[in-house]
Length: 81
Image 1 (tube, rainbow, N blue to C red):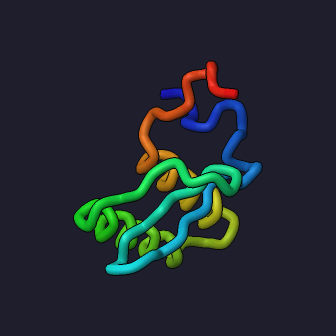
Image 2: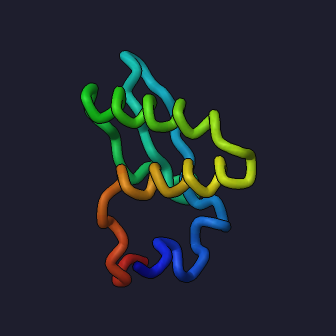
Image 3: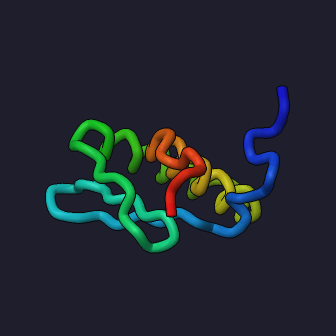
């Protein structure tokens, strides 16, 4: 099975998230909001991010970026400007 991040795009740390009202999560890609998670998905997301904090620091950042990328879905198709 090939590595998930073959081009090392997640090393650039493109994703971030903010926690809003009622524990709702907004995920940003290079500072621009790309998705808002509903209540159920927000709970799942926060549990996974909490589990990541128990990993080693070097693995922690990449794993957190991968989780955020997966929760955003397939939003990049190559024709965005």
